[in-house]
Length: 398
Image (cartoon, rainbow, N blue to C red; front, top):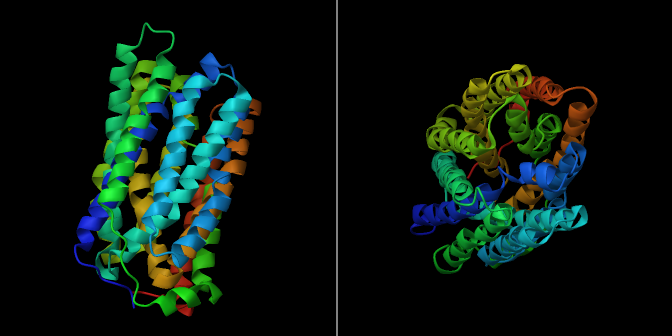
């Protein structure tokens, strides 16, 4: 039986709040990172695809390890603490490196940090909710996380204005990313609680059980989608390619995150009513249309509209997919399930990034987005089939 701790909604709020500050840190530097790597360091698009794929794929082994530790340890929040700490170090030290090898190493470290924090954080949210409100609460956590990604680009816009005549502006921005992560670490230590599982025996048994078949089916469908879902850095490069000014990139990214954050709670709540898979299908249709639009766009105003619409995709999938994992997998196995889920999704990002970089450089700038739209359509069909036949397998709803 899943624990139902007191003040569980407060715990979800504080988990979301630490993600809020983590999102500020990430999106202070992420929108300008590909521009810095290409314009300042002179790195190729294929190298950027490799680097950004490495951020998530390198995290995969640590997601699995963190997932097993999450199931085994009572103090999950300190696993998340370590992850945020490593990400802080990786981002801060970007200010002091100017070599491709140094960038690769620091992005690798940031990826390790992301992998280490994800599984325990997701498990903490799942253990602080029930089936009837899980979609809404994952939506709350995602909304807070994403509002941080609204504040981050706006802060970046201000920093670019402040440092626009300074040749070291990128280095100063990388240093500033550490400040919100320090706040995040303090929230983990003093505010986030570890819900107690029903018994120690349950924790000792959990690693011997197999995960449900429909978890692996859903994960396989996510892999199909993920192969065409390259890093969002390619969207930023596409915006610049179409003609968006560098100074406008943070504002465009802020608009995307505002739509994402604003829609996360209502769409998460919708998944509590009509089913997680149906809401994900809505999101994948939005993704396919967005990517098709990015492939065909040729005017700057279209970039603003497409990024706004792209936020609907995130709002319908990020939190809802993780709520679906919690529905499928029993409480004592969720750390391992989230570890595998996050790891596989991360591993797929490496070939997705390499394919996108290759298509951009060898075909044209539209090709990666047309390819992504095709794969999203295929994954949508597979998920619709999954909905029809899922009753053949049992859910672990609790």
